[in-house]
Image (cartoon, rainbow, N blue to C red; front, side, top):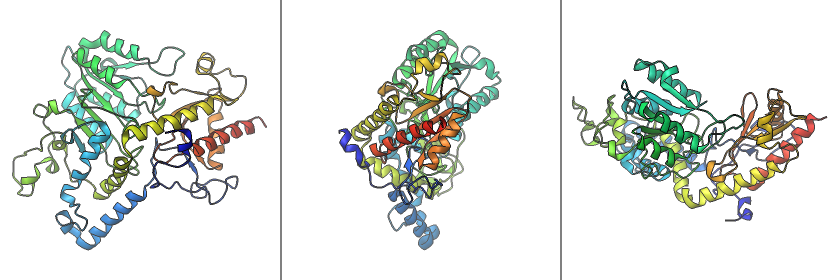
Length: 444
């Protein structure tokens, strides 16, 4: 694959909203597709998902309750997830029995922590990255409290070194080494939502296991974004949402992973009907008999429309291939965005920006995502200088008015994510052009 291949999307199944639809002003050419670089927050609707959803609405209309066992397209609702689990397994590098399509990310995180966070008087601490996504922070703190521990003591947060934006691999490993005997659980984001750093998942998992710790991952920003091998890496558990790079729609159904080595050890404690074996589920037995593996953690019957949207998107992943096509294209697109940004006259090298972030001579930006391709996915996070000056909001408003949709994180960061399924090199170049024009306008 070369740069010239990037002028067309990898899949023709996605249509970004037009400039008018996203509220761009008269500055943006009417009727033109917007430049949508926000798949790290919410992926686009695919034509395939739209079709599958419409098929389920028709099945509901024409079959009603009968659709559970006699579906016009052969996708009986009672076993709908059976079509999703092999696709999940392929995306995260697992076996079908190790994954389950269910719930929401934080609910699944609590279920997994309830099974795998087993503090003792010697081992009770949770090691995570500093400034993890707030929902994770809340979950970690509440789990510590539920077990009678003070979160201020029980939670160890690993922070970047002074003057740096991201964590060094050696510092994470050293933190595990130094605190290993007191750590019950090591849990990081696969990709850090704010900085876009892809943590060294394999080495962190390996070190955690060497020190006798359980290791879990929140893959909210990694699922469908970077290649994963959860089974081979010996990850104990993982959770993810699917509405970002997975394109399942706002609030889409989530997923979880439990390594097969735990299937006969960590059986579901909070049992639900949908986790019961299908062969006897509808005989309504009084005793819970869980499905073998991760799917035994299911509780209630899932929303079919949510699964339909996810199924349509995952079918596209299957056709395209997570490896090598998707990752190869992602590396080229994100690399080209990185190159163009660094060539901007408004770019400030990260080392210089970190030394004096509040004393820039003029408005500018730096990139806080790692420069090394192996340490990032499809997201680049831009910090706007001087910090606290309000330049991010001004630039973001300019971009929207000109049909460029990124993702703002107050007070100073905009995240741009060229999703390889549907973004092109033309999107990247248009975004950088508008970014430079936005800075030009600040000087007027």
